[in-house]
Every structure is written in C-alpha cells, then in structure tokens.
Length: 328
Length: 310
Image (cartoon, rainbow over all chains, first blue to last red; front, side, top):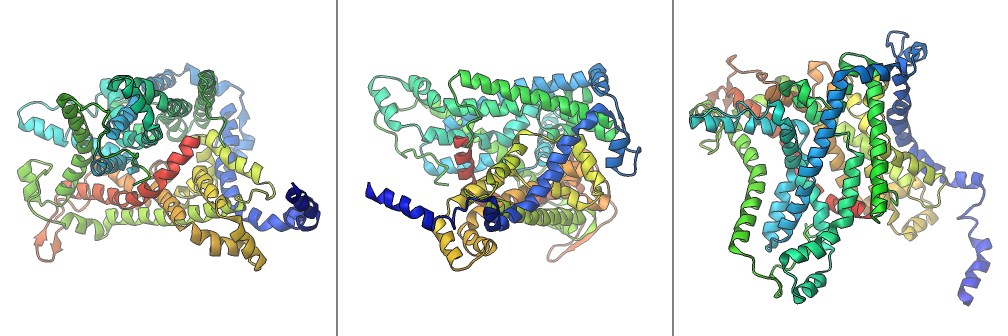
C-alpha cells in the first residue's frame, strides 16, 4: 500500500513535464506530431470531405459553364430544391438500376455469402498441412487481380471466342452464349465475385475455426454426437458472431455492388440487365453531364446504404451480438 | 503461413470417425475443381502468350499444351509503342502513388500514435469517418477536374492516396512499440522526426513494407479513376489497354502490319495478335503474383486481427 502513495506524492514533482495540463504547453510539446498529420489531413479534406459537402449539387441545377471555375459555377447555379430527385424518380432507367442492384445483392447474399464458409470448412478438414496451404495460396490469389483482369479471364475462358467455345465448336456444337446473355447475367457476375473473392473471404472463417476449442469436439464425440451434429452444435455456433458481423458489413456495403465489374460488362450485356446504381450515376453524371441528377442518384444511394447498415446493426443487437459499433 | 493455417493436427484424432469413401471422393473433387478454376486460366494464357503463330493456328486458338518457347510477343510489348507506354505509365503511377501514400500514411499514423497527444482522438475520428461516408462520384469528379487534374497522372494517385484502414493498422503497430524506447531517445535529445526515422521505422519495416505493397497493388489495379480522369491515349494505364484488347475486341498494334521482331537464337517472326493479347494479360498479372506471397504472409494476420476485433 505504501508504494502507490509514494508515487502519488512524487507525481506533482516529476510528472508535469510529461503531462502538461495547459493546452499551450501540450501544443509546444506535440506540434511536431500534429505537423506530421497535416498532409494526410489535407488530402482527406480535399478529396473526401469537400466532395461529401459537394453533394449539395444534388439540389442545384448545376451548370458547369455558369462560372470560370467549378466553384464559381456552383455559386452561380440555380437552387431547385428536390427537382433533381423528382426527375430521378420519374426516370424508368433509374428504377431498372435500383431493381438490378437489389436483385444482385439478394442473389449474392444467398449464393455467394455461404461459399467462403463452406470452403473454409472443407479446407479445414484437409489433414495434410502442405496440401492445405497450397490450396489456400491458390484460392487467395485472384483477390489481388483487378476487375479488368477478372472479367478478361472470364471472357477468355467462357466468351464467344474463348477456350470453352473453342472446345465446344471443335466437338461440333454451338457454343453457349455466356458473357453477353442478359438473362443469366446475375449468375455470371456472382460467379465472377466468387472467383475473385471467395478464397479471400475464407481467411476469416479459417481463423474462427481455428479458435474453436478442440476439446469441445472430443467431449461431443464421447457423448455420441456424430459428424453432422458436431458441425451443427459446435462449429456453426463458433462461427456465428463472425457470420453476423460479415453479414452486417455486406449489407452496409450493399448498394456498392461493384462499379468496375458492371461498367466493364454493361455494353456487352445491355443496359436493362447490367445497369446498377453506380453505373447509372456515372452515365447520368459524367457521360451525359447531368451533374445534378447524377449527384441526386448518388445521394439517394448513400442514404439507402446508411439506413441498411443501421437496420442491420439493430437486428444484430437483437440477436445479442455486438454488431459493428463497439469498434475499438 | 503458420499464422493462417489453423492449428489442426495432421493426424485424425482417435475419436473422429473415418470419413466415407464417397465423402472423401466428393471433397477431393470439389477442392481439385476449385484449385483448377484458378490455375487453368492462368496456365492457358501463359502458354498461349509464349506460342508462335503456327502453334496457335494449329490449336485453333488457345494453346493448352506448350510446344515451344517463343517470347516474341513480350519483345513487341517491351520494345515501345502503345503497350510499352502503358506499362511505363502503370509502373510510374504505382511508384509515385505508393511513395505518396506510404509517406503520408506513416507520418499520420505516427502523429496519431501517442495516446496523450493533443487532439489525437478527434483527428483519428476524422480519418475513421471516411469508412462510413462515401463522398459520391459526381462531387469527387467535379472537385478533381476543378483542381485541373484532368489528364494529369496525379488524378490517379492523390484522391485515393490515404486509406484509413492502412492508417489504423499502422497506428496500432506503432502504439505497440515500447514507450521506454521512445522516451530514452527523447532524453538523448532526439526530436519526433528523428525518433520516427531512427527508431520506429526500423522496428516496423515488415509492416510498412506490406502496407506499401498493398497500396502498390491498389495503384497497379486501379481502373475506375483512369476512366474518369484520363482521356489522352498516351496516358492510359495498362488496365485500360487490357479492357480495349480483351473486352472491347480491339486489335493490338503491330499486328498484320508486318511488324517483325528479331529474337536472338530463334530468328525473325511476327507474333500473332492473340499471343500479344495474352502477353498483356500476363504482364498485368505479374506484379500481383510477385507481391502476393509477401502480403499473404504478413498482412492476412493483420486482416484477421482487425476483423475479429471488429
């Protein structure tokens, strides 16, 4: 008990130099640190926060020629309230884009989301460590490829002039139309997402699997639980919190179904099937230069995304999980 | 690798049932298919890029079984012209971008790593908020073009230069460096900058390198900003060229125009258009292949820790 009191008594004498109370002293001590943050701070300000505020052009009839610089153009452009949103909601192609985005989201949640879990379970059950790490290395790899490369590989293998078509044609049949068929486009983009990222998504489940106490399995086996019962009562509960966390993150990112993947294939497949919110914003805003409507669509997307993530987090809390707010 | 591979005994525990033959077979088939789905396309593209016109014609397109080694497609790529230029542009963006990103991220991460410094909490929040708020494509476009960065390679680097995730990972690592080390350096009269370069950075070489590689892969793969901000042909990065050749079906240059390449030991040959296209694919893949083992070894651990802590 005496030691703490000793240090406490000594504190006023030795500590002030290290823990100055007054802001001016602390600033004098910390200014080099603050200076180091400045460049990154400015870049984020200019390229992240200024554009975030720039979303107000969604409420303007933004005319880039109203002034000499975009800032002047912004000042001189006319405020039109919700006019852009009205125009947006009257545009049938906007609804196509929204419908496609949501359809792809739901489809991927059902058919893509479980795959990394299944893959992790399969790989976890491989006994040889060498084989396991080889397979792991191979399936992670496409995560580091760009979308252009991924779509290119699909085109080269499955496209009209691709390897599959070459083999099928040699065998005397008509090759299937995989890369340009709007009806099956949703399957195509999901398989591309699987090819690119299922292996990478597996990492986190492998880590969670490794964290499960093996004695649980042994005890369950001793109690007569078979392989499937152990999977159901030990493995899946062990993965539960990770699964819920990833589901929330996926939902929060829901409307970002992937700009590059769709812009790359939009022309080959057609607007009806391949237009998503991101490509809609791009075509409306950048290509046709209706900046106001493009920004309105972007803002709508951001708002819906925020609502989705809040809702998902709420549901997670109800399930007794932490959700993402307790981020340290 | 050891950190990734779940610790599972390499022999089956006694209590576990022997798997059925059907189960084993199914598992083997699925895992073989999964691995093949990644390796076969890479293999076919590599072999075709190294094949001569005769082999490609004989195969009717893609070559699966290699017959000879003909690097003329690569000679064409690296002998200048549009493709050579795109390789150069992509390399430039990757180096400049990574240098900017890494320098600023390290500085900011160190600046925020002292748990009692002025305003470090609101500043950290300022960076973390970029996770939640997405600025929107149109306003970003207006800001970047408003700064006069259209057709400027800086438009491909500056807007994406700071990734808050990397900043947070790096900061967490810096905070784990024993404060006694830093204190003793300060007593010896070292300023913050000297402490960063002489003590903190040497101790965190591996993390910094991996974060740098992550940034580099990002810049090499970037495509979206090139669509938005680069119109000029001579500034197009490799990814755009790939899009043109493979997805839009444009013919690569030097084809049919009698572009003959001399290869020592092999003689003269005109590489077929398909081989050139495949060589562009391979050149685009290679940086990812090179850096990937490093990233995999060090970074996945960070990803797991970050994600599990959530």
